[in-house]
Image (tube, one colour):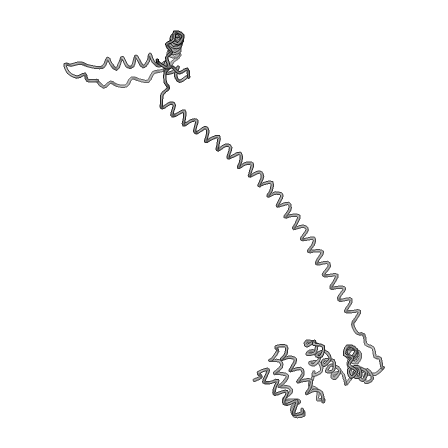
Length: 299
């Protein structure tokens, strides 16, 4: 039984049957018999068919006749099925595959566009949050600066309020100095420190000003205020006074300088001790100076 396809390609193939038959006949007519094997003569290719309106109408009539004939044969129980061209089928398969790949690409592009939109929204939200954080940070920075400025002003005001004003409890520099020394002997170091600080502020021209710095330096050294003690010893020794406490003050200054890793300055102080106080110093004082010089590695 012969099979038939009802697709447009099948109908077109059927329509081309007369034309193919004519072409085949023309080819067979070109065979020449000359007492031997038949030899096919090579012919020049005919010019391409010009498909004008007349030819197309004739082709349409032929296709309609073939359709009627095929319909009659099918009705008579002898159906005709014309198989499609394998190359056409393969081409249609490739077209279907390309359509499927195109659909996959379109779906991927849709997903990528959706993901891009989502990322864009998240990026814009992150930028807004970042701007908000920057604004809050700037505000906090300004607040911290304002608080620090206010604290500095408050501390300056507190220092100004607690700064010593010239005042003499006894009415004389000698009386105030002796009162401060009594506090030292009584062991009231805090009150003695304040008394000598008040003496220094009240009596800047007193002959005992240098000794007041010296006594205050001793009190600060006892309170572990090495930097403050060094400053007060240096003020007491300004001009290297020829006093009975000058040698001791110089040795104590050198010891504090060495204890705070200032050996070069300690050696300078010991050099001044040798030049100004060594001859009048006690043997114990000279021995201490030698020990300090060795510890400070003075040249």
